[in-house]
Image (cartoon, rainbow, N blue to C red; front, side, top):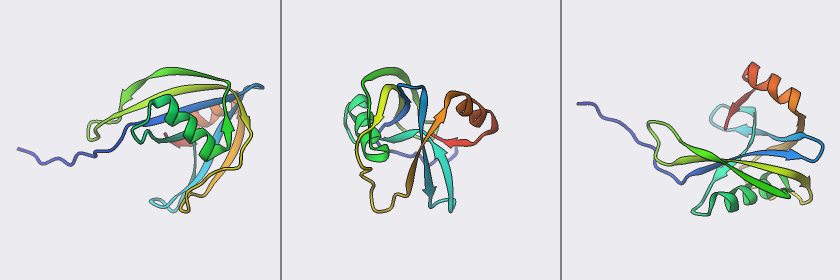
Length: 130
């Protein structure tokens, strides 16, 4: 018989945010666990909100953005050692309209990246965390 540790937390949302001119909103943020910066999509815990509401909240807080259209793409399990789901959403017509509302521990810079560059980054493993 084996012992396992199970990570229990709220579901998460992952937002693929696309501006009207097809730029993707990426975040460059500091990860204390690795003492390094990583490029990521907008993500966050649902905090018991509906996935769309949580995605809207995270996009506004982390990137200072809003979206004209939201499309729910589906969900997947978070992993074999984690409880909960990752919900994937496409945000279209994204505009930077607000100041970021970061937590004290967050160090996040917003980047707008072309779809071509996103494809290159994914192939090279430069987007390392969702």
